[in-house]
Image: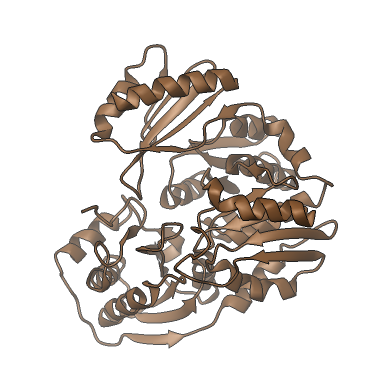
Length: 441
């Protein structure tokens, strides 16, 4: 059975891999490792069917350890981050499995100082205590319920500054984002929203709340064209990811939106540092450097990227998966924060596609998953390819003069992920065929 303790969160099938008992033990262990007894700590959940049960267990595990839990209800993951700041707590837990299918449950942990808890930053200690059932009970724990969504919406609305009225189609994917927009839209001007799948439903009856699967964007793409909208936006289940389609319905790869956001920030802060994950097109680093910025490559995963932002004092970071992290959002990610800034950017031109077109220099496969018996053997074969420059920041990256690829083991699923890019479509297709054979052995 797969281990639900991942590199940067806890995530597994409910209740086979993650159930109420493990959630209780994990929360109690979190209180021990982070020293939370007598301190205030936020807890929220998304709209998954397993969410209420897992959250009850998490809250009890914390309260039994003497923690003063602040329950912010059914909210997005970024809203939990905001609540930590707004309520001045020692961190928080969001009960969510993000974009995973409905059968999954999960727990994301943030420690004091907005420190992400993952591999190398406390996750191993939490897992060890939880697995050993070393429960600590201390008096004084409590639960207080607080509503923070309106305050979060007010915070976000201050970023809204379009240069013209925008018509935007938004697919909430039956995730939590529809609830957030109920609070946010009344605070915005110069916007007409066409809403798709805004009702939160953890069964995901229309499609998975994963905006990177192109099959999940078909309705959005069609509606953008039918409505003659300026662009479309799709969000994942817990609202920390956002992906766009342009006015023609064409999907905009999230590394290219990273480049657009980089231009926005570098105009405000010349010479700033921008981080990007290693799966991104090489056009991102080239574009950042052409604008006078410093481009820093990072490994995949929110806990690693947040650490990179803090260490490099970066203004912003983008992931190919549609996570965007902001220094002014406590180095955390927010799908709505990104959406608002991208809307501001889109308002500067009649067609969003005109901003993207100059970035379409290279030919990327997108991320492709492979089930393999032994990832280490596949990585060894990749490193042995002649003539390539090998990098092992996250999995194995091999670079050649006119193409490159990265192979990495997923931190959330039992697969190996491939990203490959070349200077031409023909070269991309040829090299993809070669790497598929290498993976197959």
